[in-house]
Image 1 (cartoon, one colour):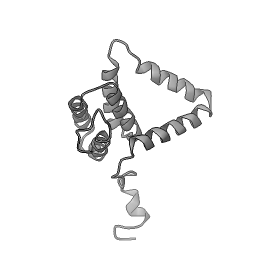
Image 2 (cartoon, rainbow, N blue to C red):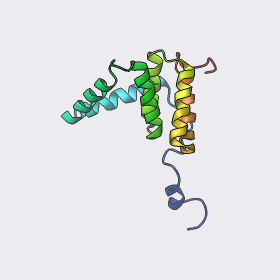
Image 3 (tube, one colour):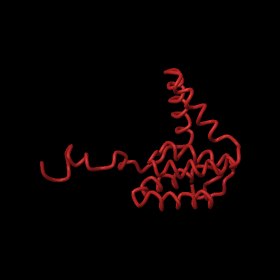
Image 4 (cartoon, rainbow, N blue to C red):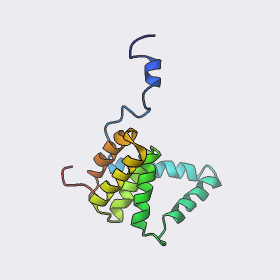
Length: 138
């Protein structure tokens, strides 16, 4: 098949290339909580992982705010959109300054390259919806 339509054309596109609208923080939180509850009821390994994740982000030698910025950078580089939204939420809760978050996203761009740009666009859009990270233009 020639041309730019059909299954072969779709195989060359990024699986989330069509996403240009970010969810509302409320919709994201609701979907995340519902999904986590389903996982928790599906086996002890899921609960063990959630406990490990919680321990990794607990206060320690690094402040929680720094850990959330690190999680944000890793999430961009691993191309995990849900994780990016989660860490943006946590950065807002930890009162990380907007300019610090943007600087961390720049580090993610350097580490991940131009392929991270679509996710970074969505991240900045999501930030606009968060009271502590938006710039008042939402």
